[in-house]
Image (tube, rainbow, N blue to C red):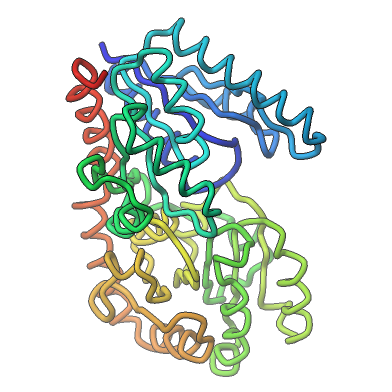
Length: 379
């Protein structure tokens, strides 16, 4: 029986975390002895995640945002030493680390613990410092790591741009549980959110940060509402941009048609209650929320960024719009609201693509095979 550790940076609501947890669940169901470990609990979700997990899940408590520099460094060192000790004691066959921070800290620890298969992963996070890119390149290209998993063609290209040895990169695209995301009953979702039953619901999902581009959806809203006054825009997610979005919504006098939902655990249900899914992002790696929307059979509109154009083909399985262009975004929304037959056709094509290419089973088997392939000869 394989014994695998999945190592994440922080416990929070995010795409990389969801991939880690979904992968762990799939491996556990396949009989793999899998554990999940995180460096710190950003949002205080550890007890909840432990209760919900069928596999061992824990936190090193190796970071605290409010610590002074010296205390922060001491906490990180102690957490890293605990990580090395755990790895040595458990004698894993393989470790997969998620995000650059976990790659930089976790792979050297795995090498010290003599774990045979040591794989980092690249999720395409933006705005990395030059120092972090340099250190990450050295870790991945050295004997400390077996290699790097790119979760999309876009992140593979990014890894190459960062100087990662191409022979050490393996493409394993993110996957989702497609079977659980279709034909769901929204129940009283609209009523609970104070949305009229005759409303046309447009959903966007993502942290409220600049890279998600939610401000362009807000700016596109007045033009949409001029022709479709029964539209209600919902954004699921939270973050530092919430207040600025609230101010923008109020200044445009569209607050009655907007719902900032905060972090939600019922995204599949929200998708089932939605007429359109809009992703106005400026930057993505491989967006899990987009894959979930496609699997749910909801027509999608996205900005034409590299991580998306490998998935969405304009007019075939969704609509692509110019980056940071609220006028084109509003026109695309109106187009699909006015043409239900086209919306249905695009949604069906998108759903078929996700089921055939981006399933959790495909992703899980690829990671499982990766550890099997290297755990005996990757020292």
